[in-house]
Image 1 (cartoon, helix red, strand yellow):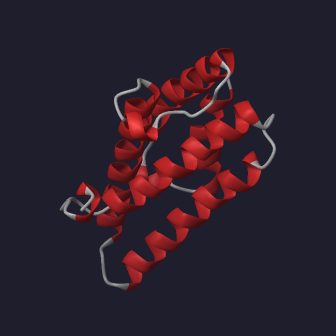
Image 2 (cartoon, one colour; image 1 turned 30 degrees about the vertical axis):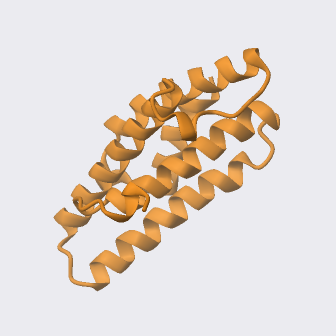
Image 3 (cartoon, rainbow, N blue to C red; image 1 turned 60 degrees about the vertical axis):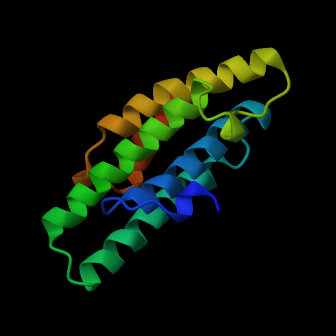
Length: 138
């Protein structure tokens, strides 16, 4: 059984894992596909968080707890992006065959990981997701 089926963590861990996956798809599309489809990936990141936050609030989670879950989600996503970009998470490594493009993708992922890890959960809107992803563009 894969370890992700046995992990117990704080609120935001699962959505952070999902945000990480979208952020890595963004990095890949940005490098390997000349950015084609990146806007819809950013929209999906914002939509995921919006739905998660709404569901948490509807379930009775206090607003401060929802914000904290957002901070933890972005922090977790940032750490996973860094692990992948640094090659620590080999199975999830950036699979781009051209060495130059792979370096550019890893560079984008490393710079984006800091943005994600330092973003505020209170500002988890589509515009804040766009700002966090903006560092992936360089």
